[in-house]
Amino acid sequence: MTRKQQARRGGYVIFLLPGLILSFVVIVVPLLMNVGISFTRWQGVGTPKWIGLRNYTQLFHDANFWASFRHTIAIVVAMAIVPTVIGLILASVLFDIIAKKFNDRTASFFRAGIFIPQVLPVAVTGIVWGWLLAPTGAVNATLKNVGLTGLAKNWLGDPKWALLSVMGIMVWVQLGYPIVMFMAGLQRVDPNLYEAAGLDGASWWQRFSKITVHMVRPEIYVVLVTTTIAALKTFAQIFVLTGGGPGNATLVPSYFSYKEFFEDANVGYGSAISTVMVIIITIVATVFLRLQTAEDRAGGK
Amino acid sequence: MTAATQRPALVPRDRDTPARRRPGRLPADRRSRATYAILFGLTVLVLLVLAPFFVIVINAFKDPADLAAHGPLTLPHGWHFSAIKNFWSQVHFGGVLLNSLEISGVVAVLGVVLSLLNAYALGIGRLRGRVAFLIFFLIANVLPQEGLVYPLYYLAKQVHLYDTKLAIVIIFTVIQSTFGTYLLSSVFAAFPLELLEAAAIDGANKWRALWNVVVPISRPTLGVLFTFFFIWTWNEFFLPLVFLIDNSKQTVPVALAVSTGQHTVNVTSTAASSLLGVLPAIVFFLIFQRTLTRGVAVGAVK
Image 1 (spheres, rainbow over the protein chains, first blue to last red):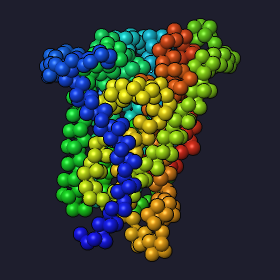
Image 2 (cartoon, each protein chain N blue to C red):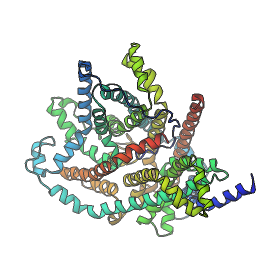
Image 3 (cartoon, rainbow over the protein chains, first blue to last red):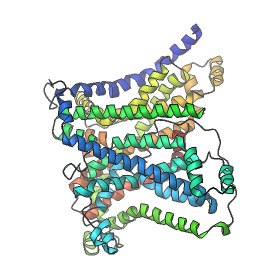
Image 4 (tube, rainbow over the protein chains, first blue to last red):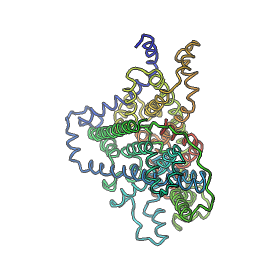
C-alpha cells in the first residue's frame, strides 16, 4: 500500500467512529452481558450468583423450552415456507396469465390487495385477529351464517387449535411479501423466453417450474432468509393473541425469555434462552449467506 | 410494512437484464374460460384477505347494543362514533400518535445519517478490515432483540434513561443503521470515484465531499432507507413495550396492545382499537407506496 493510499484511509476512520462507539454500547456490550448473565442466578436486583452451566442444563430438560422450539418450527413453516410456495404460484399466475391476458394494472391491483396486511404493525394484526377469532367473533359468526356451526370453535383458547390459528394469521400477514419480491424479480425475465416456451408447447406448469422458479432464485433466497429469521423472532402476535397459552400451546422462545426476564424475574434463565436464540439465528443467517455466495459463484456472475 | 420488519439482510446480486417491455396485450378472444376462472379465484382470494378490514370498519362504528343484538357481520344500524371516541380518550391516542411520529421520524433521520457515515468510511473509504466490519453489521442486524433487552433495560435504568423516548431513539437509531450501513456500503462500492477525485482537486475536504457529492447523488437510496426506518420503527413492539411504561410516552402499537389487553370485554372498543392501529399504517402505505415498491426492489437487487 502506498503512503498516499494509507493517508486516504486514515482520513475516513473518523466517519466510522460514531457508528462503532454506538454499536459497541447498544449491541456488543449488552450482548456480552447477556451471555455473562446466562451463567448466573439473578433476580435483576442484588448480585448475580455464578452457577456455571446450570441454566443451560435446566433448559435442556425443560419441556417448555422444547415446546417453544417446536412452535417456532411451526411458525417458520407458516411465515417462510407456505407463503414462499403460494407466493411463487400466485406471482407466476399474476405475471404469466393475468398481466398478459388482461393487463398489468389488474395484476398490480391483486398484488396490492394481497400486500395490504404487510403494512400493519404486527401488534395490530394481533389485536385485529384476536378480535375476529374470539368465541363470539366474526369468524365463528361467519361459520354459523353459512351453516357450518359445527366448525365454530374457541380458536385461540383451545390448545388443539391455538397454534394452527396463529399459523393461519402468519400466512395472512406474510403472503404479500414474497409476491411483491417475486414479481419484481420476474421483471428481469425476458418475455421472449416465455413466448418461445409457449410456442414449443410448454404447459403453464412447465413454464412455472423451469423458467419462473429458476429466474427468481435470488429472490427466493432473500424471502426465505428474511422470513425465517423474522419467524424465529416472533413475539408481538403471541404477546397480544395468546400470551403463549393456553398452557404452553403457543409458547415461543422470545416470549418465553420475556416472561422469565420481566414476569418471573429469572433473569439468568431468560438470558440462557435468549443466548441460545442468538446462536441459532446467527447460524441460520451464516448458513444462508454461505449458500447464497456459493450459488452466486456457481451461477458464474 | 412488515416487509418492513424483515430486513432484506442478504441481497442477491444480479441485475443483468433490465426490465423489458412485455409483448402487447393479447386479444380478448384468447382469454379462455380457464383464464376467467383464475381471475375469479384471485378476486375471491383478495376479498378474503381484505375481509378483516371491512369487518373492523363496520364494527368500530356500532354501538355495543347493536353488536350484541345483530352480531359482528351486519352493517351498523346508524353510525356511532362513541367507541372510537371513548377508546381515543382512554389511550390518549392523540399523544400516542405524536410519540410514534416523533420517535419514528427522529430515528429515521438519525439512522440514515449514521448509516451514511459508516458506509462512507466502509464503502468509499474502503477501510482496512472492511469485510469484518460489514459482517459485524450484518450479524448485528439479524440478532434477536431478546438477546439485548435485559442488559439494555438494566443499563438504561443506571443512566436514568429508562421509560424515556430518548432511550428508544438511541437504540433504534443503532439497530436500523446496521441494516443501512450494510446496504449503503454495497451501493457505495460502485460509487464513481472520479467525482470524489474531482472534488478533492477543487479543494473539498472529506466532509464537503460527503455532503456536496455523495449525498446528492445517493439521495434516492437515502429516501428509501428513510422510509424503511420510519415504518420499521413505527411497527416495532418488543423494545418499546419494555422501555415505554408511561402512557404519555408510549407508541401506537404498544398503547393499543396494552390497553386492548385490559379491556377485552368491550368488543366494539377492540374494533375501534384495531381501526386506529390500521389507519396510520394504511396512510403510510399510500404515501410511501412508490418508495416502498422501489425499496423492496432496492433491498432485493441492489
